[in-house]
Image (cartoon, rainbow, N blue to C red; front, side, top):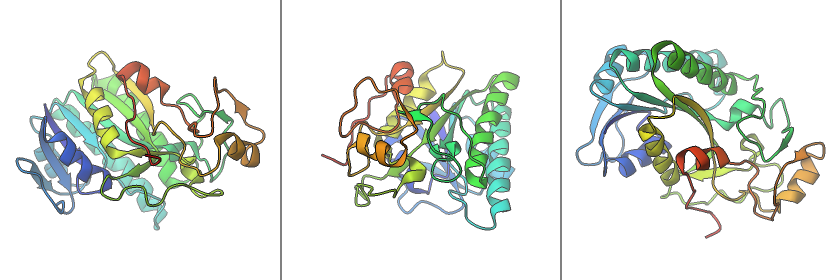
Amino acid sequence: MRIAITGSSGLIGTVLLQELHQRHQIVGLDRTPPADLPPGVRFVQGDLDHRQALTAAFAGAQGVIHLAAVPYDIPPLHEVFRINMQGTYNALEIAVEQKVRCLLFASSIMAYGFGQNVDPQYFPVDEEHPALANRPYGLSKRLGEELCRTFTERCGLRTHCFRLTTAVAPGKRYDFLPSRERQGEVGIYSYFDIRDFALLAEAALLAEHLAHEVFLVSAGDSGHADPTGEVIARYYPQAQLRYGRLEAATPFVTCTKARRLLDFAPRHSWRT
């Protein structure tokens, strides 16, 4: 499969290039070239406002993994919203023009608004939990998911949105884990290994029976130093518990949907 990856020089994109080029034809797009471009991978320089660059990158692609975005609420905040929203619209529109079959959108767990304007209503958090973020970055991800759904309904482009938790690259290992106290609350103390996400993205691109879905992405265990039940009782005493079984390392979010629809099973953990 020919796959175009926007934001290919970033933390996640760099790992995806290394993982996916072994099985697919990959084209990367970013403002700057990656530090180490794998053999056979083509690179197009440009950003999400450069429609010609997007067209060149997407030409002939069957799938697009859209990662490029301003990654946090970095001032000026109006630019965070503008770049993320207009950039996602541009990627979707040009994907349709180039007859791409499927676009994967890197959404974020920050779409929920945890640690900012809301607390979780229940655990484990799943895709049905209200996404209520009201700050520019999280809001841009909420609305980006709506853009994807709209393009699926209007244009027939298959789209899947991944609410990513904290990304961990294999070279950087897990030096920042585990979380302590309320550190990592915006990501609800969850993380994922990018190598696992590469397999999940590949499965989603190949799942032609699915039209539009939203998936949480997380490791199979908690990223917090303390037992999950203790953390919930300490910081979220009003939250409802919906666990079938709650153990010390049980994650705060569930990837049951990705497991059910895409046969996703995380392989990596900071504990091993």
